[in-house]
Amino acid sequence: MPLDTPTPAATPASAKRPKTGGRKKGTPNRTTLLIREAALQVFADLQDEAGGNNQHFLKWARYNPNRFYVLLMRLLPRRVYAPEAIDPPIASGTAPGALPPGGAGVR
Image (cartoon, rainbow, N blue to C red; front, top):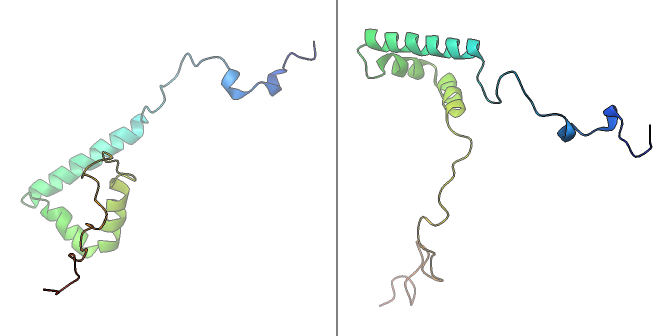
């Protein structure tokens, strides 16, 4: 074997052949999806029994505030992206809460 030919162990991962079978990246596990759907259905049934308007969930959250906030933090997005220019740039000296020319209370 010539010296400039890489051995299979020295070949970088990006030089491997393209994936041709199996699940596509990001496809959820079927069991996880079924469990999630079942849990949502049970939750919907509990809400119907409690009169709707999330009364059952509200009662649980009041008795389990720590668990509620842990659940809430898992459901919220980790990052929120906003357009770069929501408001026009603030001119120098006109920041919110800035004193009017001459200072506060000067007449």
